[in-house]
Amino acid sequence: MRAPTTFLTLVTAGGVAAALALPATAAPAAPPFRGGPPPVGHELPKVPVMTGGGGAVASVDPIASQVGIDILEKGGTAADAAVATAAAVATVEPYSSGIGGGGFFVHYDAETQKVTTLDGRETAPATFDEKVFLNPDGSQMDFNTVVNSGLSVGTPGTAATWDEALRTYGTMDLNTVLKPSEEIARKGFVVDATFHQDTLDNAKRFSMFPATAEIYLPGGAPVPVGGVQRNPDLARAYRELRTHGVESLHAGRMGQDLLREVQNPTTAPGVTVPKGQLTAADLAAYEVNHRAPTHTEHQGVDVYGMDTPSSGGIAVSEILNLLEAFEERTGKTVKDLSEAEYLHWFSEASAMAFADRNRYVGDVPGVPTAELTSQEFADERSCLFSDDTAQKRPVPFGSPDGDYDEECAAAGTSLLPGDGQSTTSLTVTDRWGDVVTYTLTIEQYGGSGIVVPGWGFLLNNELTDFNFAPTTPGVPDPNLPGPGKRPRSSMSPSIVLEDGKPYLTAGSPGGATIITTVAQIIAGVVDRGLPVGDAVAAPRLSSRNGTEEAETAIFATAIGDELRAKGHVLRSRPVIGNGTAIRSLSPSLWTAAAEPVRRGGGSAMVVDPQ
Image (tube, rainbow, N blue to C red):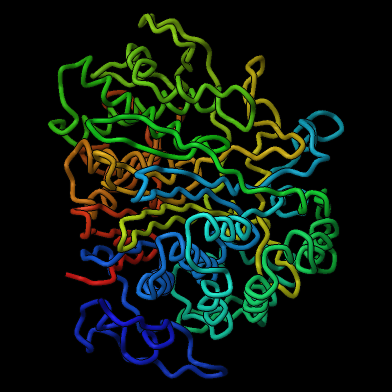
């Protein structure tokens, strides 16, 4: 075993090349940085696929992945490394996640061979009701107005999730695992083209809030590509959590400042935004919930995911079950289909799963999770499937009532609500075989646009994940606002086991496209037989019971023509998802995979590369 190596040693003393099994010359020469200390991790290369032992990390950024690897090398568990990686991602990709947001943490324990989950989703204020996002005349409030306001901010759950994960599954504490991110925030990181563009895209709304503009629009403009983005206020926030614990956020001075900003946002001259309703009681009442995972059997493996308030575990399970049902109905196998045939099947399965998701799933009692994830329900739903013709969108939802007689009577139709796109996902394994897949978010890119003054982190706009009004008149809507309620999510962190042992983990950001991205990665490996790196890199289609979105390699090729000939209505979308995955090759050997190209590419690392 290697001697433990500190993060600072790896980044500053040439240890990165050795850790990645690359020649020393592979790292680019450090540019001359002026106006402060050298940024952290500027020599780290992006490697999308890596195989080896000792533990593995896949995330969207090499700085974050290296933080996780360092924790694993120090003897940390997968949970320790996942929390440290998540905090680092929140520093170098702050528009996607952070202290001001929430998420779902899925964990596999190698000793017990059990999968458990933590629900760290944000919660609505106790004052919320179903009409909170309606104007006095009953019309819906303008979506963007609500997003960029205190009214969209739910009680954050991320810091509490980090603390609970370490207490439940870890061997380290917040004081240890947050140190690297405090250093990154203080010293800064090099701005790449993706971060610069994300800042430009949000510049108008960031300029509405002085504390946000001070960090991300210094001098009135984004930090240029190649410049250094620093955030000393965020470093202060990490230090506060390290030394005073999450109580500072939920019952201390950090929470007091958060409430002050939510209840009366500090805005630029001439800018007025709706005020939020969070109170000290809401912050103090927040709890991370331990929930049983969703589960379905698929092609000889067991697929586990996140139950409500996420719709991800349910919808991913149903998509996979429907693919199996289509095989039974047609006598064909997914593996033997052409790419266009497979995407037709996948699109039809996704549309049906989303119809059921929109009708039945939310943070409400009585969600029929067991029925929605059953093969019997999928078998009944598959009677709508045609191998030659796409169903007209929106397709009807089914009846998960336990009585499956394969009649094709439509139960009704519901429409797809909107979802934000800003999320991040990471996955980790350790030397003992524990596995974590963790997806966390602040909702839109840049969340509400509001930074808590003095603390440097963006607040979520998660409450806009509620439907402002019922999506379909006369059809019950499980995702309306309510007191203390958690908005429905599409986050789909998933763990796949074979004979009780890790086989595959997967996760992605991307709003409602998370579900289709994760399902495609799993189906790519399990059903299509792809190597995990190829499954992550494969062109994506997202069918969510409306117009289907397809990446260029599908939309603008013969594959897209074949789909359109079957009746699919496609819309071009340059990038769908930003996946990470780890495939277990043996009890001590893993292949970690991240995006090779999407959003500038991600970062896969292992402790001991082969």
